[in-house]
Length: 233
Length: 292
Image (cartoon, rainbow over all chains, first blue to last red; front, side, top):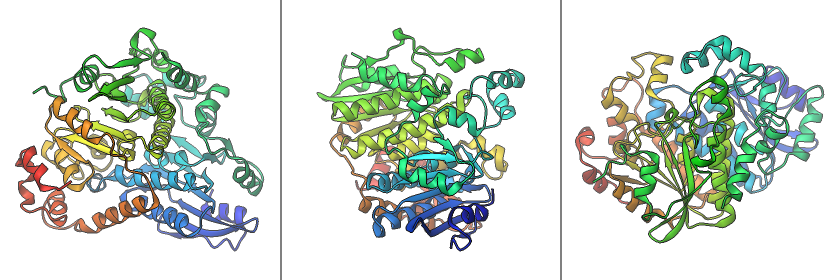
């Protein structure tokens, strides 16, 4: 979905959100309450600078608007694959963005992620995956890599991976698989305003993804292994 | 002097911690392996590539994890990631003096990439919980596989990062960047360029690591001991300071078409005299260039 159409569905035609290059920002009103929206569009690669731009808005929200909820709108092709970004320390910039979102959560801001187009790898780790919880539109795409690329990298036959991915969500891209693994809490379908309202009211603040993955059968071991470590003699 | 880079994860644990003090949780005898690798017919490891447990360091209780680079490049899969999360949650409950993470990882394990991606983000959140509780998390980087991908982000979420000059810390590896944008962007066979871009000396000069040590297990041990008790609370003020530093760095790096090597230009802009000499300098000389 186009970000503008999404913003209109969520916040009405006078939403006031704007795009500066690939960066989205808005101070919007939702149910009469202010909400900070931060996002990216055009499948933006998240580089050093774009990570900092997003972190700036998170920190400003924490400093100037204590408790104001933050909605992260996600559309990224992943981290910027450039030597300059590596030289600058893209991992540090992304960790900084993640730490800023984490600080906001700890200080009582609800932070909700929404994958409205695509979310890949490194671009996703320090946005939707570090929020209180992440949601997705049904037509969105989430992956680390497609099956042909995975076949090349792992040197496994593509048809074998395709066959296995029918029953094991760990192997294949797709929002439904991320829901099954607990990485996405739920899909937003139909009335998007109702979905956001519900997310703001009910999203847990603790990390329940491993538990969800076990209950939904998509990631059966993570929660049990964590518990075994806690119980180990 | 014993090379940290050449040790296995378990050798590092044996040599870095107080002798005989490492008590492992979920040891290989329990055979907790990756079900996904088994489905793919790929050999698995009885510890899924990471050893976790408690130990003593200089007489103080620490919780520790060591990733094994020889198994799938230290890649994080579902079980591997859950062991790290479990260790962090346990630290939150039992409050050791510190958590040490002997990181050696290419990031998400691509054989089970979707689960690995979620797992890395769970590690991040759990680590930040530990840090917020005032328990310092110390990451040690000196393995041959470096610390890349999601683990490169995790490392920078910690209180304290120790690197050797042969250690590498980054996000995407040179091969990935070359495959994406061509050999002119990043020549993955140019060793000197790789080290100038991701190596311990560069990360030390920019402050991306807090201590630079020789490739010596004893040096890592000393640096880890010094880091215990040095919790760095992640406050708004601290994050504002971090933000200012990173913005300054972005502006300090000259434009893309500037003459000369990017790394050398950046070091010069950061106030390093004789920046072009840096790759030739010994660790001791570099240590002296940055006051702690």
